[in-house]
Image 1 (tube, helix red, strand yellow):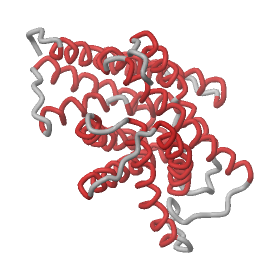
Image 2 (tube, rainbow, N blue to C red; image 1 turned 135 degrees about the vertical axis):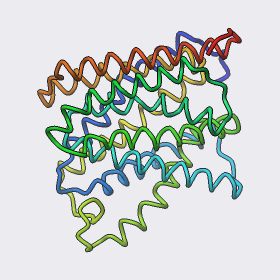
Image 3 (cartoon, rainbow, N blue to C red; image 1 turned 30 degrees about the vertical axis):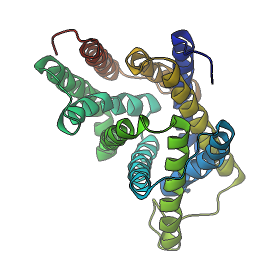
Image 4 (cartoon, rainbow, N blue to C red; image 1 turned 180 degrees about the vertical axis):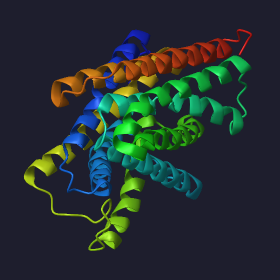
Length: 302
């Protein structure tokens, strides 16, 4: 931890984290459908908190949070739980690559929220790029909507929740270690999730009423939690080694990895309209990231 940051190490860690992240969704999609999404989401954060808290202790980065910070952790936890629940619900009905491609309108939401909430300066070209990227997402949604209905829009809800989550993360990241932040937020998610599942027990609410899972279901939920912890740790340590503006484009490796995994495991083959939409989303996203990088470096034009 005392070694000087290495941009190359950061890039490699980010690339590995982005490549492994779709593994979370593969395990989530393999969880039997009789297990409620709320239970799968809770299991993810139970395991994530169990793994991350000891790591934070070993790193010596824990501290006693004040009431304001506890409130922020609870807010982040609620947002990431809703985002996860929406996405896992979508995965039960649509290909992983399609869902992730739609989710990647999140950088556009984040850019617009950054201008609105954080008063970050953006120009007309980045605003246009955000709407172009959203148009690309609609191209991916259109064939899915015709097959599965409104569920195809759920990844948009995930993107919106995650964008607000990231705004809160930006406000907190400068005051605490990323592992500490992830550990406390995971614990806060457990604090929220367990009472909800307890209240929903026996209510027959499909997304919340918990069931006793099969051995296969337990293994798949363990896979969700382990993959989420590993991927997020890799990304957190990558951000400690290299600037976010350098690493951000590597996130699009998730779409590539998701397409490969979707084909190998579920025999999902993207259609031409989907591929066009993905290309538009990635192109617009890279443009927004490039403009943000120039703005960060003090180069004129937005």
